View: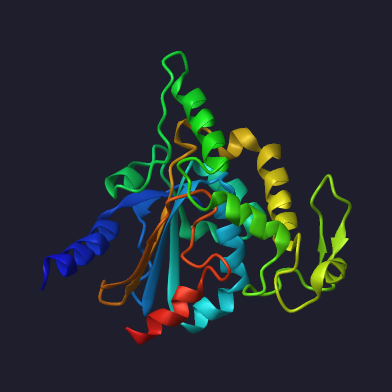
Length: 267
């Protein structure tokens, strides 16, 4: 076994031994509990649960739930926040509460040396205020490569991505009036991500988070902390990993964030 292979195995061992609070019942249990019979295990290290990245990631997981089930993949996620954050997140996104764990101080993220984001510190600012400053700079693309282009993709559309809103589906994203999916045909057609389609879903997520800000973000000190995705086979071998380096960069292929699932079948 090479040093690299050993490191990948140790990563799975770390997850197997890690315990965190489960959102569904508040119990402190191993985060991989109940995954033993799965052919593959998808472990998600999410940033602050009020982060738009995670709301969007959960939306894709719900959309592709049948794909994941057919592939025999068990999903477990660890997000930054407390149990109330997790309950609100699950109520909004539909992510199963028994598959979500919370890590209030981002300890697991730091143990795995995940990107903490921009870390400028002004001496007169509190840790929370510095985090806000760094978050705003990252939203502008500073210390967050690719963020601005991903924002623009949400407005201009993406012919490589699938259609996101069904023609008969109604989306409520205040301050916009309720919009039917058929509306987006006028912006560019159908069968792919149309202009303004993704931006509308992101606006809906923004309204949700801002309406419950203190619930989603009990500690603003971790606003810039990024997450990661890890996919293991039944033997604990790492098939795929993606470590986030920017806001709105939670996947290697943002046009189809779960495309790595099909690719991993070749391993």
